[in-house]
Image (cartoon, rainbow, N blue to C red; front, side, top):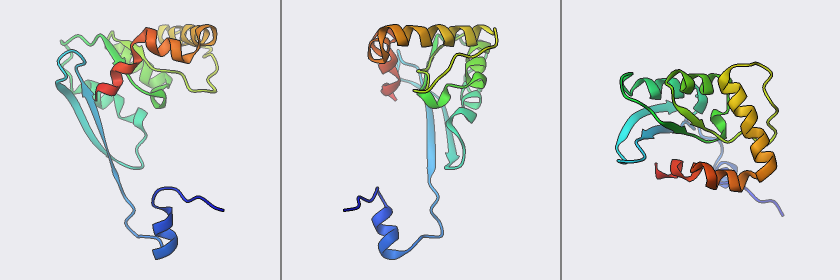
Length: 138
């Protein structure tokens, strides 16, 4: 018995489509007011982490950003640095196979401490403690 994923059965039955393109809408909101603050539409070949800087740049520099909640796709040095440059707190779960970063930037040290905390307390407890569920407001 073989299980086919979403859309696979259609390709198997009818053949491949030439225009299998989809778009992804990236949205940034204010968690207190639920107001949309940033929006970006990308094609399917753009990584989530490549968009973060553009999203944050849509928010005026003189406006304070307290925290940025994202999923593990944004667990990169570049994303954490972009967030740190805006003096915001990054709430990003490290990837499942994450290893400590060796550099001494504050964003890297913060992430390494997060890895130790998750190892000690567990991912579920960290998500509750950090308010990680706030990102699902989008």
